[in-house]
Length: 129
View 1 (cartoon, rainbow, N blue to C red):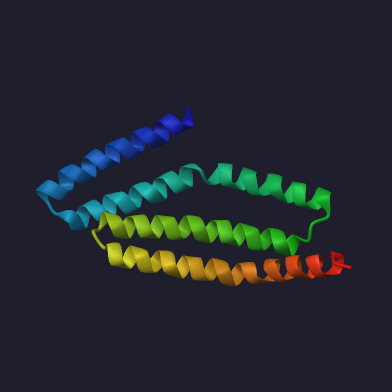
View 2: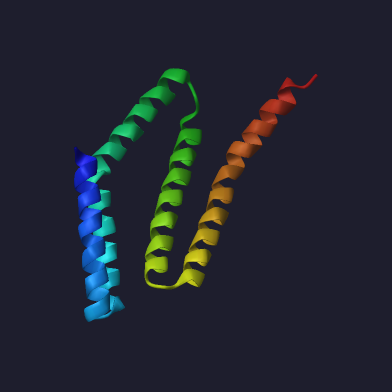
């Protein structure tokens, strides 16, 4: 199973990062963490493409505007990227920077969500007598 490979890579990388952090220094342990995250991301890239294609087919069959779908995908992408960046910052011991990354991500998500909220409000107003 692919998840066993991913978890195995994560455990080996964690042990390696702990050993490197204790013997060489935390600077190199951060690189191990970053490289592991990128490797795992590339391992699941084809699964992500499958999900996007399936959702795209669903959107086309339900006549939902593609713009809303693309906004939702962007929001999901921002959430994952922000989480990855914040965790890397936390691994480096920079909790304050991680918090700022998360705050910026939330703001970007709010900005992207405004057109969907406006369309929803417009629909509600049309339905009211």
